Image (cartoon, rainbow, N blue to C red):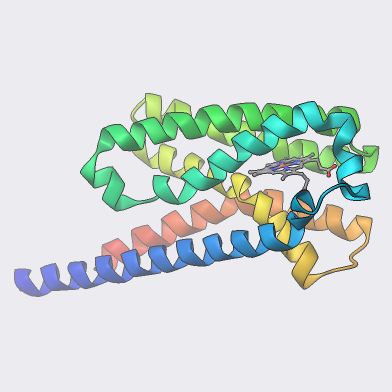
Length: 212
Ligand code: HEM
């Protein structure tokens, strides 16, 4: 009986790990496609699109550099293999992630409040502020050794980091030509989704392990 239960738990673990790896690969592929479509103008030389960024380039350049590091660290932070092999490496990657989000989100907030159109300020400002807040709560939970809360808040934080991809991919590929009101509505949906999806996943996981 115990052997059957052990085998069931192992099968469920393997299926969960495979699903997690597949999801990570899909998200990395989505980000690569987004960069190749949306950011190609950075590599094409002078253009009107690049000129538009000039007034806030001194703030945008470090926002992009630190945001890129945070984005790259995402898949590494969710790797169970790294966490099991070296908790110290996981912690240092975590600290680096939090420092880069802190810098990138504060710069995003500044750019939004100073340079974005007033109609975009609320939704984008909320996104940047929630990026910062969810990361701060993840750090507080880790510092107080509350693993459940840490998982919840760090997943929310990573989803906000991933808005780099979700904001661009959907608009470029799924709804090209969408108007300003549509973009604003979509950004509000993303803000809500980044907050609630981790709850749903953690709850579904807890059910799976209870059944296994
Ligand atoms: C909640 C998360 C984020 C917010 C609120 C945010 C906010 C902003 C804002 C306000 C701009 C200026 C947009 C414009 O007027 O064109 C911008 C541009 C940019 N951001 Fe972020 N950002 C976030 C995450 C990231 C991340 C994780 C990266 C990763 C590299 C990133 C990379 C860029 C790039 C490359 C641009 C230049 C515009 C473009 O070509 O897309 N951002 N961001």
